[in-house]
Amino acid sequence: MTRLVDARTDQFVEDIAALDPLTATFSGIAGHDGELPDLSPDGYAAREELHRRALAEVEAIEPVDEREQVAKDAFLERVGLIVARADAGVERSEFSVISSAAHAMREVFDLMPTETADDWDAIGSRMAKIPAALEGYRTTLLEEAGAGRVSARRQYAEVVTLVRGWTGQEGGAGDYFLRVVADAPEPVRHSLTRAAEQASAAYADFGRFVETELQPRGREVDGVGREAYSLASRYFLGAEIDLEETYRWGWEELVRIEADMAATAQRIVSGGSVADAVAALDADPARDCGSREAFQAWMQAKSDEILTAFDGVHFDIAEPIRTLACKVAPVNDGGAWYTPPSEDFSRPGTMWFSFTDDHERFSTWRETTTVFHEGVPGHHLQCAQVVHRAELLNRWQRLLCWVSGHGEGWALYAERLMDELGYFEDPGDRLGFLDMQGFRAARVIVDIGVHLGLTVPADNPFGWRPGETWNADLVLEFMRAHSRMDDGSLRFEVNRYLGWPGQAPSYKVGERIWLDARAEAQARHGSSFDLKAFHTAALDLGALGLDPLRAALARI
Image 1 (tube, rainbow, N blue to C red):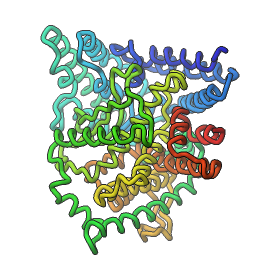
Image 2 (image 1 turned 60 degrees about the vertical axis):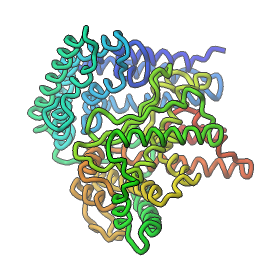
Image 3 (image 1 turned 120 degrees about the vertical axis):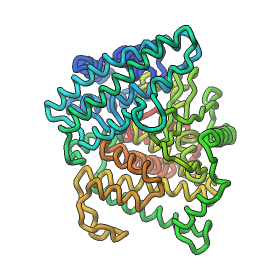
């Protein structure tokens, strides 16, 4: 029995790795670590043609069984949307504080090993190619700007600030590229330092180009409008949703969560408010790690504890997945994220935290839920399991398929699962969990609101700004009122929503669809429903758009 869907999509993995070495490294595909993609218009055209050709060929293949049907559905949904984004000019012109080819070229060095001479050769080779890659990227961005495809002006300004930080012109982190090669062995340190200096100079020059050539041409308005937002929402969710209904649901969710927060706050400060409870938790020295190094040790210990407790009880965790590295990132941009293991698990799955220059408090009560989200049972369990299941999933499914609504929805569902399993019995940790739940609900409201140009409901439950039209200032004001995040991080978050339409709601909307799928499975199976078996079956499908996920789960 020839599995033609698997064969064609596996070939696609090799083809895309050759044309996009950054994706190869991020996905753990060996053999391309010394290379960079062609970021000129010709390079983008070649990658777009590769996607179009593969889409047409896979569409014509008849799957041999249910497993291949799921793989085909996933491929057509994902690659079809990548082609739609290319047709709309998004693939070439997307440029924001959180997402661009310039970000990817900087971030990839975080994942490159430094153990052997070959490792250092790859780093040097890749760094040496940065000036030419950025030159090609300039040509692409100017061509897109000439066609009217530009980002909002604030996004260009924020990237300029980031680039100044990466190149040591601003902030306290120093030159990122020089730090990457600082520990290189003596025989190659000089050549690597030279490559790092040239890479840093190229980035600094690119930042000036963005400031002088692109920023003045940027849009004044942050919102992208309904047509662009609908495509972005489908891309991040893998599902078509009723945007107005989801906007209304976001308000309802926020009210529900904040009522739970108020009740939980009473367990911390009797008769006090949520703000009183937060102040008490922040003042508790037992809940503050005190330093980046102590925080890293804490999150590693917490992660190891959950991995041990869950294996064989709530999930069956294969041996390679039992290693999860927890690191503080070498940049001061802020945020937390997860990177999956390499295909051979020589690079483990890794949870990253980044702290801004002015970050002073390293609170465990705020971040316990984040450890569950990024680690187990969140992203690490999901992503590393997919990489491991070679007997069930083809290489494209294991290494290249990612859907934000599926992945971030699962991770948020995982936080909810931890609450159901009793891991938030401590009221401080539970308040941290609820705070992040409310934060994600508020993001649904502001993201849809600002990009569609909606008005604040006249009868909104908070009596806040009734009838006013969403804009960037209102987004920041609303998020300040409904989160406990420090102002620097919150401003970064708001700029992220403004520049990455459709991504922020994918967490809460994805969680909603995961919960619906579980409820539907419970209804179908009745008293025979087994939660562990449901989770195993769902994760064994690999990453899927949420519409294909619902269809596949209904067939199980």
